[in-house]
Image (cartoon, rainbow, N blue to C red; front, side, top):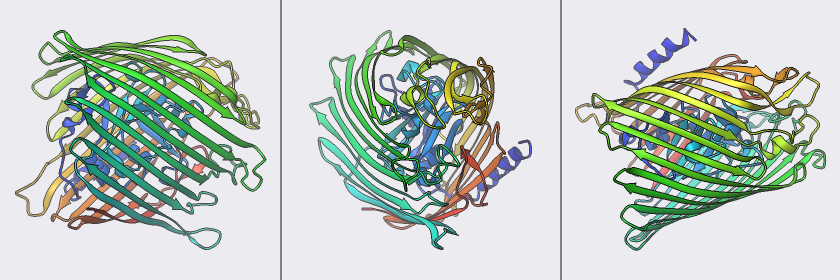
Length: 622
């Protein structure tokens, strides 16, 4: 690690002045972090929040949301397939079930398993920005945001038009039949901007024959969102989407016996929300959402009757959020109810109900001081009551500097898979208790129109930590509340952009960033026979992300990235990617190179990740 950090810094400083960026630089501080009740711009947040903004999304060499998230410091992306067909997302050393994923503030809750939370009906081209809220987010979003939350915000429609993105790629390696491994993708989006409404409709098809035996994939996506103005101040929001995702799952869950496994995950999402201003100080925001997920897993696709698991999950949620803007400060109050049901060949027919009550208060009446405090009270029909308070405070000084602190608590409910799974190598445990956490963080920020700096340290304790464990290698895995997990971590991140360089003959704009996260988890085992753990020992210990890009000679753009990862129980590795694009009048041609140096590495289980991969694409907008 000592050798790698100076090399990464040198890479950033050199590449930052020799690389390229294609679109007009936006001010990161203007991004409005969209919590469901109280909202604050990025520059006024008292939390450790990482924003992947629209400029980065356009320039990073990523073709999936999970690949985008791999550039966010503190986010651990454990992919099992190319192009994000299956990926587990965790934050700051947690597990994938301890992170909550949201789409435009709608919770993508999957009570079957967190493995399916990234099965989303949108593509990278649909996204405006991504908000990564690190640390306990239960005060804001409720249960299952134990270690943080990721809110994916789609683009707003500002004009009528059509855009498309077509691409193809290959590793230039051959499969057993002598064919080159490769993939292709076609995406299209249509927008309609009217006087009183706006609409966006996107479709996508991506497929490939994989990168090793039985890793071929094929998925289709469709997504719609509409906004309708009602009267002078009210607004109706409607959204919905569907994804059909089929892939070979060689080694995904039960290596080496699952070499011929196959999985199909089909997810439908829908949400209706209404915003109305009842008085000059009272805003009401009701919302209704529904998620249906079908997970069909074949342990051996040639003999589908052997260990065939078919799960159908339904989640219906209703929310009523209120915002009161008074002379004493801003208050947020809300209530939500959720019904979770599953009909499974393995897990049986199960259902549970969840009720959450929110209360928040933002105080900003003292100059340079912002304090947010509140609590979330949760009742679950299987696990009774839980109260999760939290507080954050920040004080701005010398114009752009801020010192901040936040404390919070959280809870994660066991999934239906944790509780009831029955298999030859995995057995559920219906005696599990929810995980509970305490979290504290403090740090220093600097925010200006061109430079953003964050330095912070946190401590977290998770009681009744759930992990799949066993006493000896020949035993089946079983989830247990086997430990207390104590974690200490710190982060240093910086982002600099020049804005438009009007006096330069060569460069139009430049941007570069560097981030480092260190985690030191300590597992205090409370079950003596838990000698082997599936997830607790796979945590990232050191993570460095570096990006550099610039726009030059008005038409060329180059982005260079590097990611250094060191896990507790695995070798360290560095992955470098690049994107070069050429801008035409209403279109662009781009070439991506992923894993340029063909590094051999694993992110999850026993699944080797793809080596070097080259992609050629074409985008246009009318």
